[in-house]
Image (cartoon, rainbow, N blue to C red; front, side, top):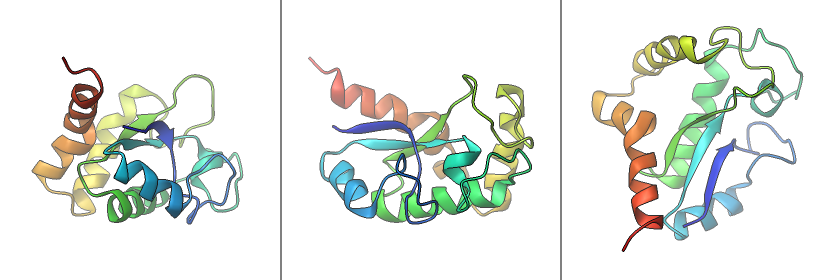
Amino acid sequence: PLVATHSNAYAISPHARNLTDRQLAAIAESDGMVGLNFAVAFLRPDGRMQADTGFDIMLRHLDHLIEHLGEDRVGLGSDFDGTTVPQVIGDAAGLPALRRAMIAHGYDAKLMTKLCHANWVNVLGRIWHD
């Protein structure tokens, strides 16, 4: 499986680091997955390094990734190692706020489990099998 541990949708933010719909299709075909990158430059359509980036753009990326990969091939990838992330998250302590935004957006408990951890465990199982 192809795994992009922390990448976003080029269709929403046309940064060379983000994945095109064709690349997403290849990842889906390989039974891989994509983790949402929290770096604001890769989230924002304008590519600006502005920490005032809100949850709305993160949810747009998640919706696009789910639409193109299916709900079993998307997760949270973060990127807390030195980049600018939305100030509404700040660091790992802000993840509950993201979870609340995802639930308010309409993601149910089953989807939340998949996006927050189960999909990562499953893809690792597909990679590291006997």
